Length: 522
Image 1 (tube, rainbow, N blue to C red):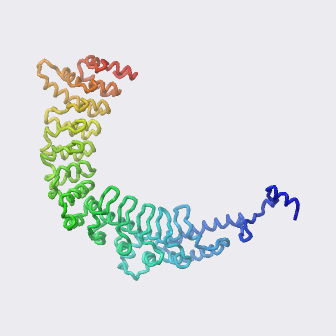
Image 2 (image 1 turned 120 degrees about the horizontal axis):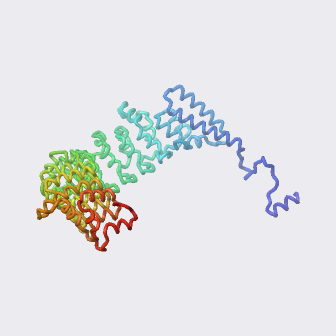
Image 3 (image 1 turned 90 degrees about the horizontal axis):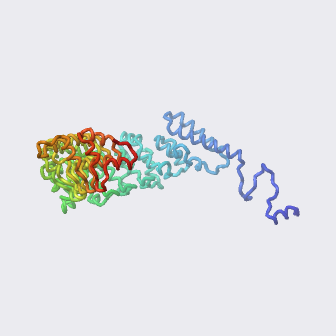
């Protein structure tokens, strides 16, 4: 043994090696030279590109000849023990492998080659955690092919081949926890659903807790729904937001399912509750047919109107004469809901449902008492709520309606003593402030008993209303720096000095407030 080499080993030093030579890790391991690694990496990328092209090629002769080129390239990968590893590798662009592209393109020739000759994984996960069966269930080409061949079990479609495979996982879930049946139902692929559903589990929930049956009740046409006859178990299948398939059916106007459910024995224990649940579901979206059918059966019309006024499509429901004749009457218009004390009009204003506001105001039951109703906690009227929402169209509707009642309810105070004008100043609702000031002036001009009182004094009386903090609406406008509202109030006043020098509980005038802000707001 070389003594110097032995000394180096004792000291922990490596023996001298050539810079270009490779270090054997194990006698049974053959290292791959860097040049070969680069060459094989390029070859692999070429194979992936060709596989994608061949899968979507429509000309038989071309893709068969290209497949032969791919097989030749696979043979050149001398350091790859199994071509299957190359074929199953996900590409960087789409995160799919060859078998996924073959299914997407409905290319049976390539698909059979990959599955039978190269034994590619039938459950291989690609982009979004989707397996070949997910892609087959989503394929409109396969759906069309099944319809053309009458969905025969003997047909040799890619879906049939997948379902006959001994290792197929029929309920495999993707990243959204959806099974192939979910995907087929969501796309209304009736023929595919017929093949899958008898072997699939129908109540597998996805990330939202929705089963394939939920999606059938949402997206399904009449043919799709025939594959899922009503089962009382549906009433226990709930999404994360507590919707059963029947709730979804009511929401998306699948009348037959709702009617079948109501006629089912288990529903007879509390039919009123069921009716109202389905009406609420219908009001959430666009279930006009369901609502027209169920509204006369409901025992709580007030609740139905409340929900209609909350939903984006509520105005469509209120445009139906049969529905409005049941939902809108003197009792429902004045009804205040126990949770917040809101009337239907307050609710529609709060959720900015301008078309619902139009429908409610047009009703002969929208009288003075409706405008004077107050919410539970803050004791606010619909005008307070309107001031906060800042929707010009709704403001105009309410002020026009208030004109019929001589504007007597415009400046009612809430629990904090604020009038709608206080809130306009606070949130800078310039349009409503401009709309409020003239009618407020008109009302107080009539209400002040002295015949010597002029319009300016009437406005002073209106603007002198103070909240619990001793602030007038003018104080609020100055304190929050609402320059346009301040100028409008001063323009309408014949005695702006009196307005400016009005004091609050701390004996501050508007000048003190403006000075504190450091702004020249006057």
